[in-house]
Length: 115
Picture 1 (cartoon, rainbow, N blue to C red):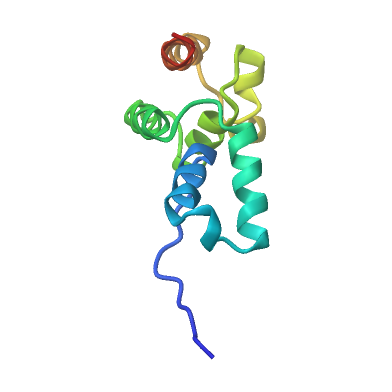
Picture 2 (picture 1 turned 90 degrees about the horizontal axis):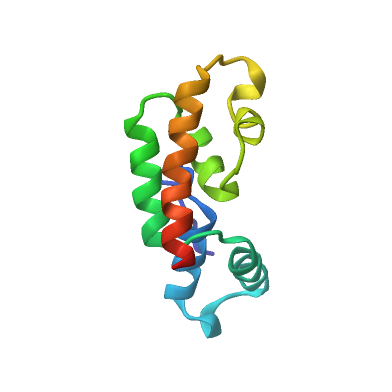
């Protein structure tokens, strides 16, 4: 029996999961991994490279922790109301102007994807 150790726990975006599973090759995936790849393919809003860049830019803003930034990239909210859902269940108060700057950043990546 092969024992596996967890070396690092890190939140990843759905597009990153999709890219990782695709890199393994579909013929090498077990049933759970195939289902995960199918889910990731259906629900990825942007590609993995853009998701990584967007995630980095969101973290640079220093308004969000990594888990919040990952969830925002996964869902790509389109309004301030949708964006507030991701901010620690309402425990974190963020100025509307800062939320608008996050939305404009998301829109920039959304437009790139549509082009």
